[in-house]
Image (tube, rainbow, N blue to C red):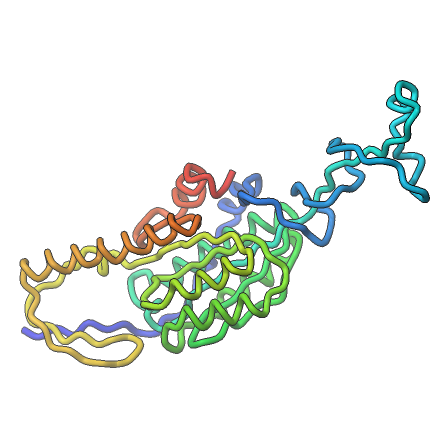
Length: 303
């Protein structure tokens, strides 16, 4: 009997995150391997020297310097003026880039819904830590961005924006990521959430790295894509190109398919490792709470 595999447009009717879950993640923070310059006082170590309570270094006095920052104890010993420098705490820029091409419309729950929940959780964690949060949906060759937000009071607008995002267009990660990197002046931590069904994704990630972003790849797949349960005569319909192909699924073919999936995922992970990016692969059947509260903490991406 012939079966047809396709997906339908669905509406995300449920809230992305519950109040109970938000309380659980409120004390978490996003880990940055490098120090990035910020714009406002926050809770991050800055590359600048300011006037916080944590001592950083000394420098020689220059005419016009504030005498209140002179270390008079050192002057009493050396009879020379030295200025005390302190670490200034600033906000981190966190960018969450969501693949919204039509291939993300597949699955139960949809890959896009699962990806939205990840984006919402990471956004809230960053906002609770006074980081600056920017979001973008990647579809076609461009990135549609939401203006940067700061503070927990911005969480509602972020969640509403995420709920409004729908799948459309083909996957062109190379072009859309390049578009984002060229239009974003302030470097920071970038989280790319995608199924990475684009053979040129490496060019897009390289564009981010060339602009000094710290990149994490969050690879979201449907369980059926990893472990197909259907066999027999099928009509496959490509969700992005609408291309149709008749195929007979046998156990031998399934074995070859699973080997190709492992090769596909392994290639992305190897690329991430070579480039110094974080890489996490999950399916939409994975426990979302375990992913955020446990696994990402174990991987050192959250603390």
